[in-house]
Length: 118
Image (cartoon, rainbow, N blue to C red; front, side, top):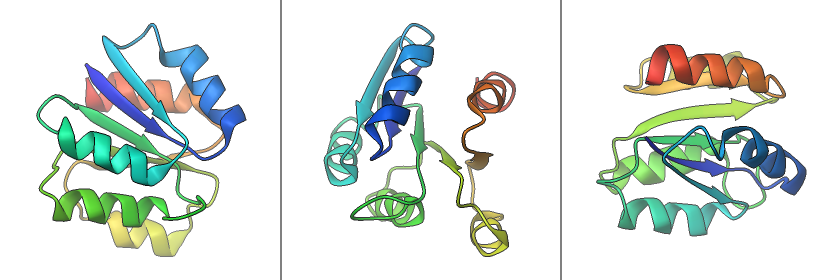
């Protein structure tokens, strides 16, 4: 499984790297959402999952998701954030292949990936 992680917090990105680097066949880690989008679009046929923070510098996680969908990237997407509220949940509730996980629950993220994604 090939996964892309996007989070503008280097500490969180480092933690995700430490936990998931050996778990997946290929894993890429981005602190810049625009670089991540470009990479994902280029490799869209080879990316199985995107794990993305919600609150970031340039784009929020929903905008990243919408940009990917506009560019015909239909890969599974996990919004991993401490800032998930009812409005966000409603906005993505009916979207295909989109999941929510609350930060900093990395164990919950790992469980979600193992039970729902793989």
